[in-house]
Length: 411
Image 1 (cartoon, rainbow, N blue to C red):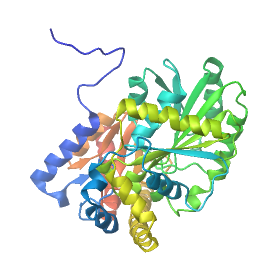
Image 2 (image 1 turned 90 degrees about the vertical axis):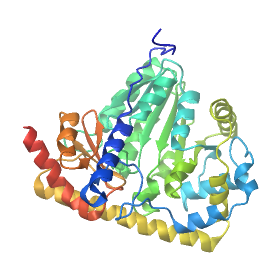
Image 3 (image 1 turned 120 degrees about the vertical axis):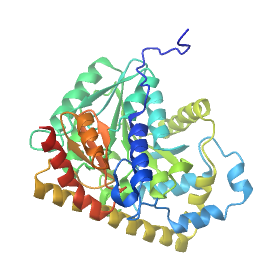
Image 4 (image 1 turned 90 degrees about the horizontal axis):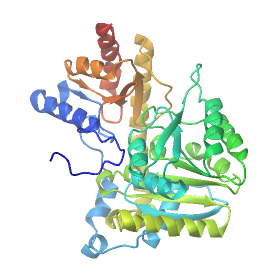
């Protein structure tokens, strides 16, 4: 007997490509040292010396917690103080006009998972863009759904609103429910942010969905606080706060990234509902799914974020550290873009964020060639992802020519 698992039609790989790429990079660092290796695989922010960025202000609060603050169970939907604080974190100065409800989740992944499970049906297709975070497919498959994608960019490199419109109308003909996942601002893996024109086009398509059909518009905003000016990157909020009653916007907000608490797994899903009944239902169904999947989200990071938002001077410290980290990241992204343009390396349209995407025909062969040069990137189906969050600006300037040269060697 070689298998006991019930695969139920799921394709489960024997090896996780992300883990494999990170392991190869770490092996090279052990052998040659950090300075001689470019490890652009990691989806977390590192300083120029290769150390994980953890805000000192956040660390100070974490270390001040009493045992009861992290050991006791918290409410399934999150502590009241955290739920109030995360609204401020997610929306900034914008005050939603809709009826809102917050459910805490262990990471943004869990928010996307809950949205799919509660706003689509088994067998449904979930719509997202062609360049997307690979686990969307795994989450959908594990819930007996599948992914349909629209082409993210047209031939001119603009957001492909025509294909978005076509795919929404195609799917809604055959499904009562449709979940649309848009990862913006600063998409993983491309770094692209929808423009206001893009958002108005998205709204136009959703306004044309028949009223008897139901759409959950899930915005994975994991990188919003590293995508540019905090107020400017939230200018789209009034657009999604003004959709018809059969469209439910859901913000998946990752406090893990915003507060450099990756391993603490802290996030929230927030709805913008047209009625108090739909908002109340949102809290009920997502709390039910949370209870069934992980029971309670971690309490410690919720306590940390509640304390930060209850102390103006502490919040100012956190925001100052985040601004410094954001500027460092933006400088790295611009440096990579500049050098890519100089050497003729093609990249997918990029705005800001943790990642830049380089399209190529055979990612695995390219990664093998780059590993010979002690360069490690993340493989995707149609390209390789560069984490500018994980490497210094100097390495960001050096890397495009290395990639271009490796591609030339493969031709």
